[in-house]
Length: 529
Image (tube, rainbow, N blue to C red; front, side):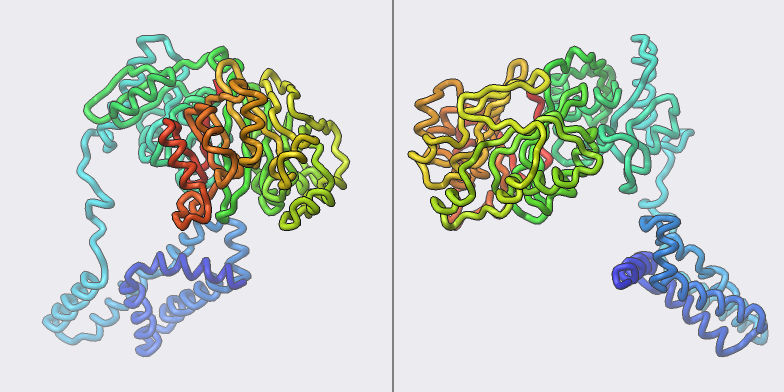
């Protein structure tokens, strides 16, 4: 009830603006009650206003109305208030009370002055702009649409689906209905888009920093072959590298075309790193290909299960392989909750580490926790496959090589069995690879380097233990990754008090020439070619 009332009050405050017009409206209602002119009209105006506020602000009726029209547009209910009619009627009544033409003219001037001083002009630059053409649309919109049509006609392109800046979505549709778009005005209002690919395109186009590789991926999935974007050298170079060709430009915008073939993405996978909403450190990745196959890595805490479930449902609902690096609560919690009650989610294979018993883990590291691990042990998991160091497996053409998993050699090197016995693996597509270090720590670094050498090298790396502590500096330098993913929120990435080594490791990776990604910009994505 309180929440509903707070929503209504917030929307009223927004509608109220400075409050002067509504103050004038209430003053008019009081005048009508006191002076009692023409009883029927007085009862109509005053009674209607009181009934409106009673219905609109009463939590039960407000919730019923929101259920019917939607919470997002409830503010339009205030349009039903007869503000203009009551103000005008009251003004006429006041004028009629004046005797003599001169007094009425003076009162009319006073009333006009009150209205002017309590309001703001509707005809201003934020609402109205001087038209640039006969269509009364931005000339840049007209130019872009014309460039798309000209290129399509010259190259025999019949399917025209355009991605552009969000401010133009409605104007493009007004000018040229033959040019399709991945989403419309509903997305701008925060409503759901028709497809998950369209939702991702909207997210990228709404972001200040554009991930052009990911955009090209989703554009191909959504069938978008045109892109219009402000003319910029950096954007031109990045889009050209993603296969886009500049086909037209004016002083402000460049139009690109990209005819994506399924063969362009054969064997490639989109890897996404997800962050935490509450500033937690956890680990959650997905890998998806053009055919809809899906691999999930970890997932985070039990309380992250609804978000993980929603993400999987958006990506088709079937997980071909779920990889659990180790049974710590910030890695396996969401899985244990989802697998117990999967709902509309189905899971094929589950790859995990045959970890030491909860009792042995606690004996080695009394400070650790095993609550989620015990819940994991109680699950009856079909398709479960335990992996060991040196194992290899494949998921829909994607190759996995395991470098570390709990076994007797871990006992000889570490007392932190749950972390140092977690699964370190490298995933390889056609040409590129990414090394997932899970929570493996520094104690394992020398052993892994000596055992696997160059086999560990990868194009991308997920930093060990969220980038805090983790593997040795020599290990990270040896990998020679061009991008490093820290599963860490801002407080862990920016700590300068010396308690955490995350900032130091971030500086190390940047100095080594790697791009650094963290929860500050999630979801972070890369195309594993």
